[in-house]
Image (cartoon, rainbow, N blue to C red; front, side, top):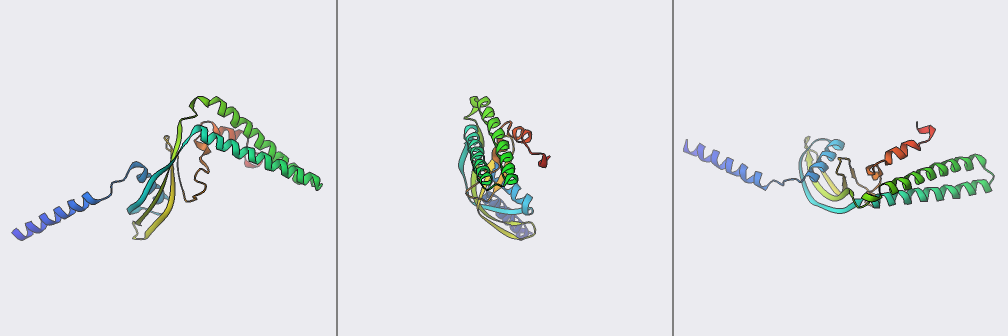
Length: 191
């Protein structure tokens, strides 16, 4: 009986020791696990070898990014209009002119939105974390994530991306009113 009690006590102590060694996750890491689980299956074990904040994007920075994007679109579409008009291809020229006008309308709306939100330009819209991890799914399949990015916003919109050069892509939705601008300027084909 003494031996059984000793074994039970040793097992309880070992379990407590292992539980104390378990990596506790930050809320951002828990979000990363949740996103990995949504895409690939339930994660049963995970070990983050890296998890660091690499960027904090303000409203002003994201607005400037969107403004630059649409300025580029207007310029490129304008060049395409000129090219197709010189080649006497009116159908293509019209298609690019329509796209240029739509992009210009969006740019004008974003500039107006930027002016109306100028008092909160320094507000953090989202933080970007870079991480690497290994782990196991509940079906015992092992996984490894070498370089992943997690964008976390205060209001709960989040994105987990692999693209190292473009982790800001798609984050315009974090700008208050941006989706309304895009919706108001959609083409009839997209309705």
